Length: 242
Ligand SMILES: [Zn+2]
Ligand SMILES: [Zn+2]
Image (tube, rainbow, N blue to C red; front, top):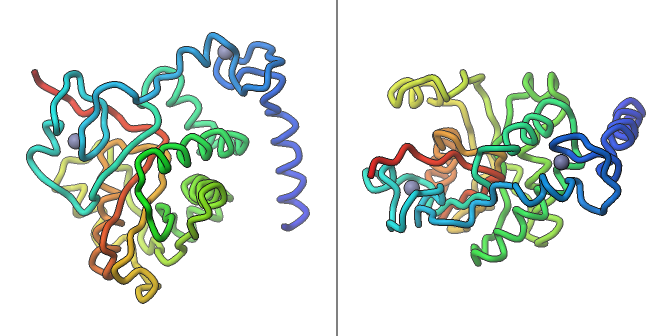
């Protein structure tokens, strides 16, 4: 690790020592947890009704959410630890843009537990890659850091054979047509032999529209992967109508 990187790492661990401050509200916190008791008890775990396919929170016990009832995608099954609400957006911002890497340990452990609970039994752990340019700007890919952590805990090897070759716009504000166009040709699988007939679990921070992970899953399937699953730290609930 280069010296600059090492210094940065040391200071970020020092500044964001989870034993001193709650990661959500910032109050002094001397427990072993990275949260104070109140914030910990209010974490929005995604443990109520969920869609059997995409794993998003639903408001009633139904097999599939309205989106999945309409179409099935290249992702065979998805699950998420949290619902993307309350304190979770802030924590994910910290993970993504403010180098709060201790969250990788916390979320990595939760993701690994979810993986084990769901018996995915995958051959590889994958992640959503960034372009070289975006990576050098941010300095790290949170999706890869989480995947590394899950790989370490579960002993399932990391798959590094996907690359992002085109910059894409943010998906959230685009409609379905624009999304597909935006993602066209964005990802490339360059290590194909390794994943032929194999099962891969993709790890990511948030699933909002799910379109990015689907584009990656589609490439993996075309390259010969048998099944592709997705586990995210959080997912937004679909807009259900009941
Ligand atoms: Zn707190
Ligand atoms: Zn669904």
